[in-house]
Image (cartoon, rainbow, N blue to C red; front, top):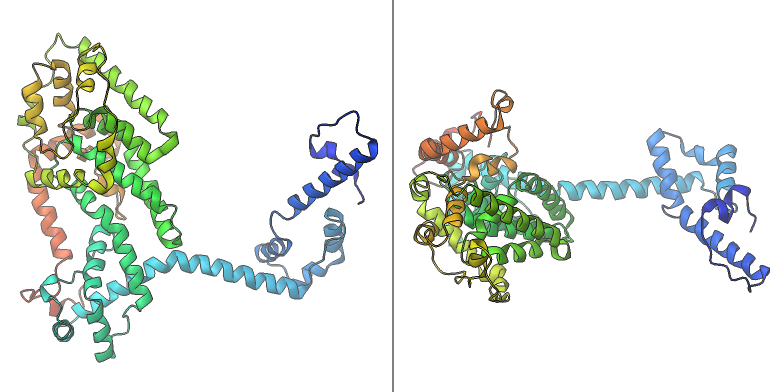
Length: 489
C-alpha cells in the first residue's frame, strides 16, 4: 500500500512495543497493517455516502458536484483507491438520509400529535349539546359509566392533560362508535394511537399523584418528601433508557427540568428524612444507591458531612434559645389528607420493600447525641407516625436533634414552587421579585404560604376545576355555548 509522508505511523501517533529480536520485515508488515486499520477506522466512522449527502444538503450543491474532477482528485488523495460516488448514488443517499431524518421528526412529534387528536375529540364533543347527547348515547349503548367523566385540559398544565387523556382512554370505544355514527367527527384516534395514549397515561400516572402533593399549598412535614423524590428520580432514569423513542425523549426533557429544580433541595430533604426514625441515614444511603448505583458514594458522603456539620453548628448554639415556640404551632398549614396520601405512597412495598431488609446497625460506642439517634433501631417503615409528636416527646432525650427537627420539618416546599418546574406557562416571579434579595423572596413566599395558603388553595382549585370540568356533567349549562369561546382549551 502506498504511503504518504504525512500518513506515517509516527505522525499518526500510534505507539508500538517493538522487540529487538524481531526482524525488520516483520516490523514493516506490522506497521503496514496498523496503518491500514487506522485509515479504515478513520475513514468509515461515517459512511462516505452519508457525508457527501450531508454536504450537498448543507451547501445546496448540485448532484453533479460529486463528479467534478477536482473533487474526485481530492477523494483519491484522502483515500487512494476509494470508490467514487456518482450523481445517481448521491441522489439515493440524499433520499435515504431524508427518510431517516423524517422518521426521527415523526417519532419526536408522535406523542404530541396523539395528544392533539384526543384534545380535538374532547373539544368536538363539548362543542354543542347535540354532540354531547350523541356521545352519551354511545356511552350508554356500550354500558360505560357516564359518571366517570370526560375532561378537557389546559395545554400548558401537563397534569390537566393527564386527566384528559385518562378520561378519554376510558371512553375509547365510545369515541370509535361516535366516529361511525357521526361523519363530521374525523379526529378519532386509531387503535395504534390509543395504544400510545395508554402508554403515555401509564408513564404520567407515576408522577401525577406525587406532583399533586408537591404542588399543593397545604404541605405535610418535609420528612416524607425525600422518599418520593427518590422514587420519581429513579423512574425517570429508567424511562430515559426506554426503547420507545418518543417516551425516552419526553423522559429526558423531564429529567432535565427535574434535576435543575431538585438539585438545590436534595440536601435539605435528605436531612429531613434522617430525622424520621423510620428512615434515618440508612434511607439516604439506600436512596442514593437506588438512583446512582455505583456512583452513589460521593452523594452519600456529602450528605453525611453536611449532617454532622449541621449538628456541630447546633451544638455550638445550644446555649442560646433555638427556634420558636413549638413546631406544631408552625405547622397549622399541614393537611391531614395530604399527610395520609404521602404516607400511603411511602408504604409502597413494590418500590421501598428492599429498604426494609437493609442490615442492622451494630451497637457501637455512642459518641454523641446524633450517633445515639442513628444507632438506635429504626421504627418499622409502614408504622403510622406523627413526626411532630415524636420529636416533642423525645426532645428532652435529644435536645439538639429536637431543635434541628423543629427547624427542618416545618420547611415549606413552596419556597420554590415545584409545579412551575414542570409547567409550560410563564414565570411565577415577576420582574420586581426577581431583583430583590434571596432572604426577602423567601420571607414573602413563606409568609404568604403560612398566612394566606388556604385562601390561595381554594381559589386555585376553583380556577383549575373551571378549566378542567367534566364536559358530560348534565348540570353544566355552558357546554352548548362554548364552541365560539375564546378560552384556550
